[in-house]
Length: 487
Image 1: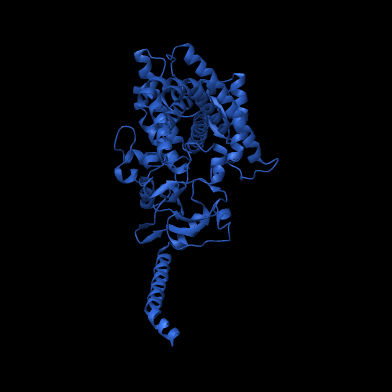
Image 2: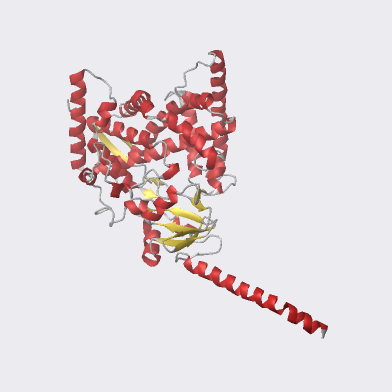
């Protein structure tokens, strides 16, 4: 009797708990149903292998095309060992990038942090990323671009181009990498090209880069293991330069000219030695690799567009004639501002080539966007190349057409209309917009200026850019050049 009465006393509570659990399960199921459609693929591996399968860089790849056709522009998957929402929707991509630090956070695979360093600008978040970003932005201010970096960009361009022999054949991608590495080594640590220490650093950096873009297998003999060893060698080199610079600053009573990034960081930041080392390495990586690929892409696309080369030549001949009339021998900021069609070529190269194809983010909170639910902790991949190659945004998106940018210019430097700008994000967006974007465009413009005025070129054999997902020319983009005299 006692047990029956006890059961009757607790029955309402038991029923309430049971009802609560049913409602909770229904709510979870409803949330689950709000997830974007898609497939989680194989256990652990998910769909990563298919997602990373190489494809032509001027497309979004068969994997993305098939998934968009099947599930739409926003779909779920399992990539890099984590549940993921992939977005090929330009509106959602902007929303993700603009809400950095509030709803989403940068979240690259652990292997990237392992090789670039835990203080790399690519992987840091919050206050640390903000502090490192400010160092980079201050050093890459428009004033420094005008008064310091433009001259150095031209010097390094001429150093590479003047080494080309008439009717010679070589790998354009290697030459572009030589140019950007020399520039960044000079810009970051005041290293002079062709010197033994610079060449040794370049050799270690090549080994390092092969590991960055390889599978993260830390086993003897693998590119990743060799890259970790090269990383250690590079950091020791940078640290030695830091110590030399500190001694010089002390000897000069703190009046040392901070005309490179290393000096700037030492004098104008409170970063630790380890943080400065990772900052320098990450900027060397970012400034060298992406710009060199963009220049190689421009050479490739222009080789198939004689009309664009002709219009570029006319533009740069006019700039050169103007320099001569004024008695100038070097390019200046006013000359750069006159490179209007060149800016259209740069925009089109970045749009069609998509040096950076997607970004790694993580949801900090449960997020709802236009009926979709993105759970807290899920990885989010905004695929920025998708809008660049979307026929609803760009007419005939797979055609190299720099004139499209002239038709929708909003300024003399080829900035497109607001509608197109919202869908054009070659340098990312939001608080993590690439700090070197203006330097990258300056490098491309100055290189193109001297290239079209001094050389004609043609592709040797067949080669094209592939996404691995990093963009690369499998054969290095072989070209044959001939000197030209226009004035």
